[in-house]
Length: 263
Image 1 (cartoon, rainbow, N blue to C red):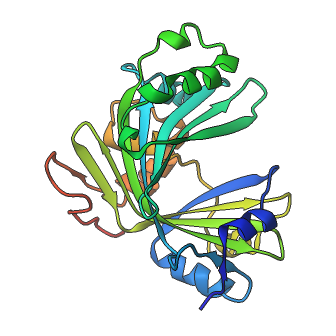
Image 2 (tube, rainbow, N blue to C red):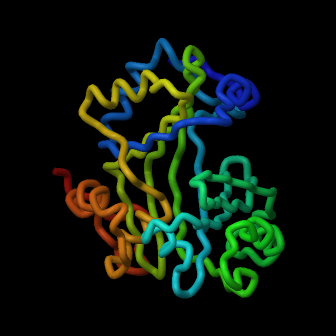
C-alpha cells in the first residue's frame, strides 16, 4: 500500500507556486498501471482515513455564456466562476479563475456556505473585485446563473523526489439543462511539476498518452451542447467523448445510469 501524506506536508513538499500543469485523458484501466508504477516513489493524500475524495462543482455563466465563449474563442482575458464543495468534509469555496493579457492564470477563492453553493449572490462583491483587472465592459452588470454541475472522485499523489503532484479524477459526470453525461471509462490525470517532467509524465508518455486540452467546464458543456463552438477541445471530444460513445441521458435519469461503449 502506498504510504500516506497529510495535507499540510503535501503543501510543504509540493507547493509549486511556479509550475507546469499537464492534463491527460486516459482509459480508467491506466490508473492502475500508473499507481503500480509509482508505488515506490509516491505518497497519497490521506485525510481522516480517506484517500479518495468526492468533489461537486457548480459553474456560473451569463445567459449568452460569456465565460465559455471567451475560452472557446481563446481570448486572452477570460474567467471562470464556480463553487467547489468537498462532500466528504462538507466544506465549500467560491472560486474565481482569471487569465490576463500576459497569459498569467490566477485562481482566488474564499470560504462559502454549503447552502449557497448554487448561487454567487452572497459572494458577488468578491467576484466583481476579481473580474475588475480584466476590464470586461460592464462586468458588474453581468448576471451569473448556474450553467453546469460536475461531480467526480479525486486521489492526490505527492512525488517527494521531484516535488511534484499528481491528481487522478474518476467517475466524472456532468449535468446541464436537464442533460446528464457520465464517463465511467475515462480518467483525467493532471501532473503539476516544476521545469522537469515527473515520473508520472514519463510513464504516461511511454504508454502513448500525451497532454490534451480538457476543461471540466468547457469540455463538459461542449459535450452536452453540440451547438456551441468547441475548437480548442474538438480533438478531445472526438477521441474521448464522441468516439467512446459517451451517452447523454435524458432528463430525469440518474447519474452514470447508462454505460459507455468501449472502443
